[in-house]
Each structure stands twice: as C-alpha cells, then as structure tokens.
Image 1: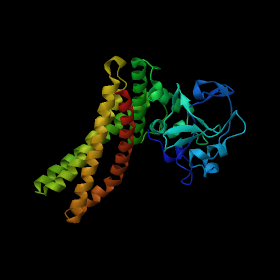
Image 2: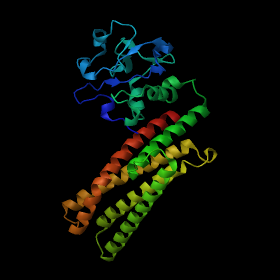
Image 3: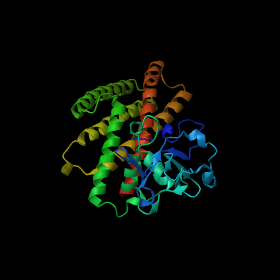
Image 4: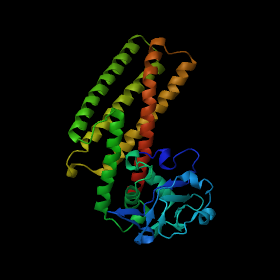
Amino acid sequence: MNAEPSTVSDSTDSPSHLVRGCPCYREFGEEKVCLNNDSVFPVNAISVDPSFFSQLDSRSLLEEFQSDNQSMCYLLMFLDREEGFCYCVSQNQQICINEKGVKVSEIDSALQFVTSSEKSRDGVLCSDCLYRYLRTLGESSEGFLTDDERQGIIATYVRELATNMAKQLSGYEGGGNPTEFNNHLWGYLREINRSRSHWASMILNLKKMKTEEDLIDLVDSYRTLARLESVFLFQVLSLDDPADETDPLSILRFMVGVSEKVITVNNAIRERTNSLVERDAIPDNIREMLAQHSEARKTTEYKFSNLVSALHNIDTHAA
C-alpha cells in the first residue's frame, strides 16, 4: 500500500513539499470543520491545484499565500523539510494533533498507507486515513490508545496492506466478496505450484547435462521466488483465521522477513544474470525463457520493495 507520486503532487512540476489533503479536515454531514490544535472550527474547503503554489518553496513564504478568510481551507499542507514540521497553507499555521506538532516524517510514513483508492476524484488525500494513521502510529498517539486498541488497528493495517498486495500479485480485479477473492487466490496458488514444478524439472535437467553451477543457481533463484510468493499468499489466506489464533505482530514480522527475502533473491538474480551474460554462458533457449519471466520478476520486486517499506513503518511504531 505505497503512496504514488500523484498523492503528493499532480504533476512532476508541482513541488514535492506540498501535499493535497490534511489530517485535520473533517466532514460531518454537510458541516466541514478543522480539528487543528485540537479545536473544532467550521471551514469552507476548496481544492486548489498545487501548481498555483509553485513559488512556495519555503516556510517564510507561507504568509504570502495565507487566505484573508479565517474559515478558508485549501486542503493543502506545506511540509517544511528543513525544520521537520507541517503547516496549513491557507492559514499559515503549524498543524498540531493531541498538542503535538505533526512531523514531516510522520506524513511521509502515513503516505505509505494511503492508496490510490483512498483519494477522491480530484486527487485529494483521504483526511480520515491520514488522521487515523497519526492517531494510531504517529507521535500524537501517545496516551490516546491502549495497547489492545493499537494492536487491533495494526492488525487492520497489516490485513489491508497484505490483501492489496495479494490482489496485485494475483491480478484479482473482482469486488469485495471475500469468498470470491479467496477462491481466486487458491487458483493462483495452483498456478505458482505448477511454475515451481517447472523450475524444479528444469534444474534437474540442467544437472543431468552437467551445466555450470552459476546457471543452475540462477534458475534455482527463480524457483525460490515462486516459493516465497506462495508462502506470502498462504499467509494472506491465514488472516481469515480466528483472531485468537493469530498474532498481528508475529504476522507482521513474518511478512517483513518474506518481503526482504524476495528483495535479496532478486538482487542475487540480477548479479548472476549479469555475470553469466558477460561470459555468454546462458544458452539461447534458456536466455529466451528467462527473458519472458524477467519483466514479471521486476514488477514483483518493485511491489515487495514498497510493501517492506510500509511494513517496516508499522513494525517500527509497534515495537
């Protein structure tokens, strides 16, 4: 569940220190309010394109862009990366929750959990999602949640991240029906197992042909990737087990371990492939076959890299 660049700005020309959305913005029916500084203040919210603030690259310039209307909300945050805190652009105020200034690092971490499905059509980040993260895992959560409440929310985060990852890996495009999704996942796991059998058979043939060890190790690394993917997906399916049989933190750290292993194996594949190519030691038929799997492997690596970053953020705050 990683934040795409578009969640920070809508174009490459927009400054990266501006974020569309604010954790202090709330809608209660037709009422729109600001919760900054732990107050409740009615506001009139408008979504402003960040490109309008292209000159805003320093906190000292905030005053120039401040609205004359005290109830105006641009739904825009300025991330002061020099001092490390976040500011409301429309009111030129530091953003504070639970009497603590919201840090840039906290927003950066929160963006890991705000997926594209958690944005409105105009690209504004889900304010509830940001607020929920800060209240759960940010510094402002201290004294706000009990350990059991925090663990319950961490379990929800892990489930959301892992389920979204499983959907991406398996190409699931269905709705929110859990049974349908689980059936799809079991079908995809059968495909992975067939792939593992294919790699195992290929390794056996290469050994019979007395192929050099580096090439055998390369093929075996692809088999390992398939195994790790199936292990991860089995773990996702286990999230449906009764709550008293699962430990959110154990599942979290297990998934971190699997994801890190995927990245390590991908690095090994890259190094072995480069070495073999330089020596022209890959037969044409195997080279073509590996090329077919290469793009999928890179995509999987990218997804797991994003996942491990997000999971590490949870693990750090949960420790």
